Each structure stands twice: as C-alpha cells, then as structure tokens.
Length: 282
Ligand code: C2E
Ligand code: CA
Ligand code: CA
Ligand code: CA
Image 1 (cartoon, rainbow, N blue to C red):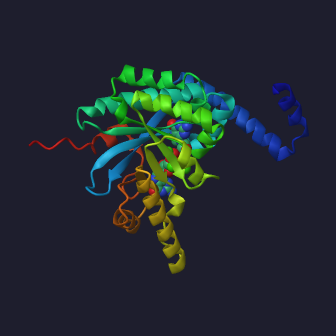
Image 2 (image 1 turned 180 degrees about the horizontal axis):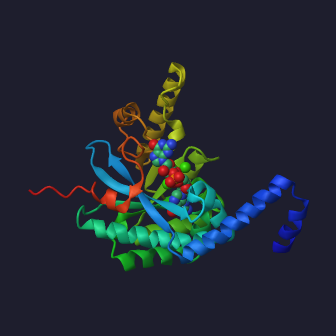
Image 3 (image 1 turned 90 degrees about the vertical axis):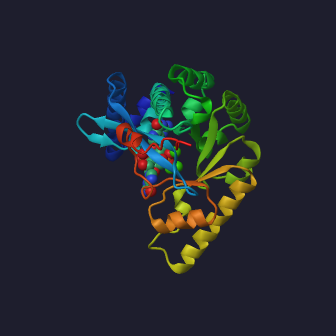
C-alpha cells in the first residue's frame, strides 16, 4: 500500500503535490516534537450549571512549532492519526493529564480531567492497559478520568467498541460521547454503547445572529437532546457556550453542565489551578 501511495504522487496536480509535501513535512516535525517535549496541554473548565462551580477540565493538546508557531489540533491531529504518531502522542496526553489531575485532587477532591481519544488509539488492543498504567503512575482515582470519544470512533465496529468500552468502564473511568448529534447515526448508537456522559455539539446552540425562527428551532432541538440524555440517565454537557444567553438557556432546560469560552477558555495548567475550589470547611 505504501508503494502505491508513492506512485500516486506523480499523478497529483501541483497544489495536491504541494499539500502532500506539506503533510510529509508536518509529519517529520511531529516526530521530532515528540522527542523534544514540544507539546503542552491546555485545560478548559467544565462548569456545573446549577451551582456555578467547577466540575473539571477538558485537556486540549497544544503544539508550538519552532517556525510556524502554534499549530491548531485540527491541522496536526489528522497527520498524527494517519502516521500512527497519535498512539505515542495520545499516551503522553493521558499520562500528563492524569498526573496534573492527581496533583489537583489535594485542592479539589473529585475534580475530573477529560481526555480526547482518537479512534486509532482506541482500536489498539492495549489501550485499556495504557489507561490503567496512566492512572497507576499518577495515583489518580479512575472516577476522575473521563475519556471523550466521538461517534466516528465507535462506528467502525460497534461490537468491538462495546467490548473495549466495557473493559474501560470496568477500570472505573467515565466515557463521554463527544460532538453528539453531528455524526451519522447518533440515536441508534445510544441503544448499544455503554457511555456515561453526552456532550451536545455546539452547532445546536442558538447563535446571536440567528433569525427568531432559527433560534426557536435550535432551542427546541437542544431541549430535546437534553431530555434524551436525561431519559437515558446520561450526564449531559453543553459545548461551545459563548454567551450568557446560551448559558441561561441550557441552565433553564436543566442541562447539568457546560463548557465554552463564556465559562472559561482553554488555559495553561498554572492558570487552571487558580480556578480549583477547595471544599468548604464545615
Ligand atoms: P473537541 O474535542 O470538540 O474540543 C473542543 C474544541 O472547541 C477545542 O478546540 C476548544 O478550544 C474549542 N472550544 C471550546 N469552547 C469553545 C467555544 O465556546 N466556542 C468555540 N468556537 N470553540 C470552543 P481545539 O483545542 O482547537 O481542539 C480541536 C479538536 O482537536 C478537539 O475538538 C479534538 O477533537 C481535537 N483534540 C484536541 N486535543 C486532543 C488530544 O489530546 N487528542 C486527540 N485525539 N484529539 C484532540
Ligand atoms: Ca472533546
Ligand atoms: Ca466536542
Ligand atoms: Ca468538535
């Protein structure tokens, strides 16, 4: 297959060839960056809408490229997935996020960290062992780790994914279905896969520029998704909350938790730490 790929390059148009060499360069730089600790994690708050308190953070990967500066995950994650580099990179993310969350337990016991898992990582036989090792090395209680997966990850082989999810849940970690509603077969999937949390994609939120009818439709859809999640006893998290109106809408509909720029941007660990809320003395 590798050989075929190489021959294909010759028939590429000029812009395609340019794109291919850009990818090859990015892959080489990624490989180098892995060896040089050029990655960091930023942490975005997940807030309890009832109490306004911090529930946990989503860990988001950041790469500072020596020449290009900050490269967005949307650009380098696909390259890391195609090259298989996402496996060692993802393991680093898990270990680092668990280490950080364990250090934060002293300040706020129970604070969670959510880690994004690529299908390439998830489909490896040893993924459960990798997760257990990360928890053990950090000394983090399993219930404080949330693994975020998308439908794309689960759909490749629902039966195999279900077995993998059951092994992971047996460790005690939580499973969250990310970007819910954007995939192909969202509803049917919920019947089969064992999950704990549902993250409603931000594309469902009414936007300030929307017409009144569009806002009403978006609100009706959001309300239905929250009800759906609650009927299935899932913990619902609203994503991409950018305004106070969106926050109030979710809170009013009984959505238990949310995340978004309005509630807190992704930030370095040192800044995130300042948001931890120590348990009140009795
Ligand atoms: P995601 O998992 O859906 O993460 C949420 C993305 O939305 C993040 O983008 C976050 O910065 C952004 N975001 C948060 N609040 C808001 C908001 O209010 N408005 C808007 N417009 N955006 C908001 P980011 O950090 O660029 O990450 C993009 C995607 O890259 C993530 O989407 C996730 O799929 C992937 N990713 C990030 N870190 C990792 C990682 O460690 N491993 C893997 N496999 N994928 C990752
Ligand atoms: Ca996510
Ligand atoms: Ca998401
Ligand atoms: Ca997304």
